[in-house]
Image: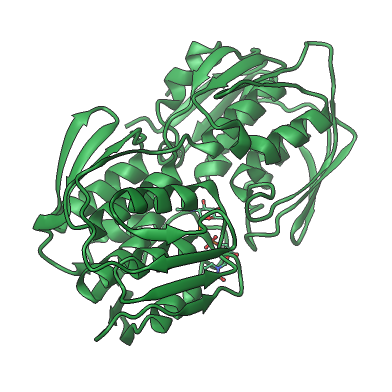
Length: 420
Ligand code: UD1
């Protein structure tokens, strides 16, 4: 597998990029396909490392997975033969924690090796646990990194999330679809992938109302029939990354197969910065003329529909190409600025203080930089595309976790990027 990318910068990206299925929706939907009571067909699945690993875990647990084509699987969970997901692979990705809710719903008991994922500070799961406890999950233990939960009876209940959490909202939903009675999640997260997981489960016979608002009501069902097909939504973060790349390279890119509504937090800011943004029914074009300048603005990451934290590193990189002083406040994760020293190695003028990064626009120069996590890695490539000269990005495994056909898509729109 490729280990680094080599980029010659200053090429304007022009043409069309087709957006793949959403990574974070796919992780939730695969776990949801494990809780239903028959096979389901999942379409528009992105071919990326995180999904590959989660599917391998599902197979290890006994699920049968058939590839119908490159982006479609049939997942049959009726052959699952254990409630214990404790192999090394489980700790490699964050998304494996959805098996907690899924198996608690399915078997009323689960053991899971603590999940991994990108490192941007503490990533607690106390809210997930609080939700499971409200539903009757007890006999909880945490030994050698393995969390075990058992519920004699799984009963619907009210759950209030004191922090808006995507993971806790989906995980509680996964258990609640199989609980007796009604569960109400208050202060639920509203991200598009929460709606997508709920839509998948409803297609398979669940009764979930209010997904996409901050109150989700789930009426449990003893059996979820499945045996239907479902198409995953486009990846909002992948789309946002290419839109930012279009602006930073003074290019003219049309991202197709996306849902423009999901992109509003970014499109509003790109327009504020002076980029041309044109929305179609399922596409967005972003362009910036060679002599136009981007204006520095301020950003604050927030749960949806706020500005997504997963576009923060790419956007901070975009601010280096703007005229004036821009600000980025990271309010979701406590420590998501570690990649900034890599940008500084490329000449970026950025000063951080706690959750604030102040970016003074100044040209970037090619350097060797490290993809320290998935989105930080995408930011390094974004920087390399805009920089003078050659940039080498190492540890690109982190990027392959979340971007389908990354190199191919970039080359097709004029980027000078190759694997090294
Ligand atoms: C998901 C995304 C991740 C994104 C994040 C925020 C997946 C696989 N990952 O992560 O890419 O950056 O949403 O949009 O979908 N928190 C608690 N207790 C908990 C759970 C969370 O305090 O039990 C806090 C976290 O520390 C964080 C905030 O809540 O400050 C948001 O986290 P959450 O929305 O749960 O993120 P993930 O679901 O892990």
